[in-house]
Length: 67
Image (cartoon, rainbow, N blue to C red; front, top):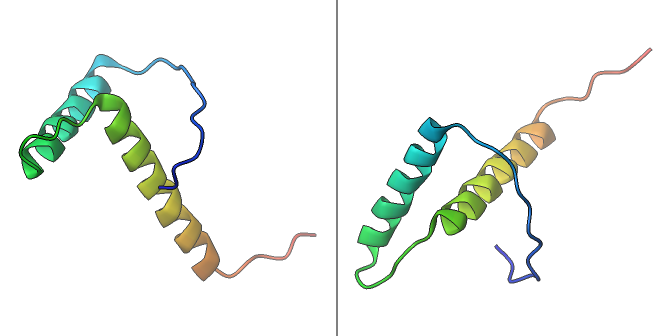
């Protein structure tokens, strides 16, 4: 991800999603000893990866004609 200026957003998520995000943060922190990965880091990483994947999928699908 590029080192752009950050914009703060806020939204509500269910507790189960928070637990999953925190689990990912813990796993990512263990990958590099001495490095702490915050929930926000994981959210940015996962969101970016998901959007990249969706962008790639949309490029490979043929477009349907409207009308």
